Structure formats: C-alpha cells, structure tokens
Length: 184
Image 1 (cartoon, rainbow, N blue to C red):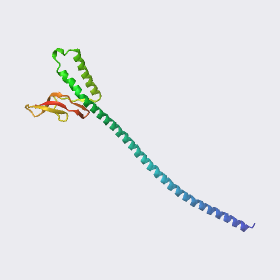
Image 2: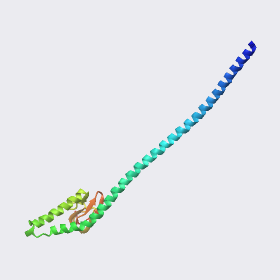
Image 3: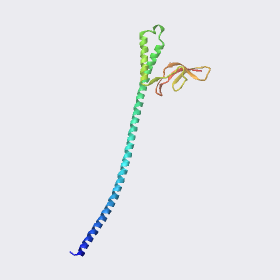
C-alpha cells in the first residue's frame, strides 16, 4: 500500500471517529434531555402522591376524631335517657324520707332506705350526673324552674326552697330543679 492510501485510510478513520463521537454526543444530549424530562415528571408525580397521602391521612384523623365524638355523644344520649326514666324513682325515695315520722327515724329500715338513696346519688356522680345546687343560689331560669315567687324587699331572686331536685350532665340540663324563689 502506498503512503497516500494509508493517509486516506487514517483520515477516513479519524473522520469516522469524529462523526461517531459527534453522533454519540448528540445521542447523549437527547438522552440527558429525555432523562431530565423523565426526572421532572417523576418528581412531580412523587410530590402529587405525597400531597394526596397527606390529605388522606388528615381525612383519616378527622374521621377518627368525629367517630370518637359521635360515640361520646351517643353515650351521653343513652345516659340521659336512662336517668330520665330513673329520676321519678329517686324523687319518690327522697319524698318518702322527708315525711318519716320522728318516732321511727332511727329504724334500721329507714336507715337502709337512706343508704340506698346515697348509693344512687353516688352512682349518678360516678357517671357524671350532678345534682343542681338550689337553696341560697341565685335563680337561673336555665337550671331552675320557679313554681312560686315570694315577694321580698329586693330585686335579686334567690332560691328559697327546693321542691324537686334537678340534674345535669356536664353543661346539659337533664331536668331543671323545681324551686320557690324569694326576692331579696
């Protein structure tokens, strides 16, 4: 082979290498652009899915909280319903204890009935039911039901007598106390 043909082969090999590297560079640029677009798409999808997951978690927490609140509310509704049915029984016990003749106040049967009333009131307190305070308290139409008013010399209405006990569960009045009021 001649020198000129060797040069020609070398030149074409160099040219082939250059064009091949140019093609590789172009391919790499396309690949980099494509990879970058794919990375951006995947990053956006990850962000969207993360946001959706956070929303779902918040919704789940809210659902659990609402469920717990509804359970507590239903429990209170049941308590109030049962207590309303039992209040006439305790009222009758209290009335009977107020009218015990003096000669049998120390009778063991009477003391037993007094014990039952105290036990019932203790049970009510345990489940959150409280007796409404009356005598000596300022009259409050939200918790007291006045069945009589005695005139006095002032403008302030004060409970002077309790005719029937009232009960509440937290802020909810189960039954207002039936009272007489005096103006002081």
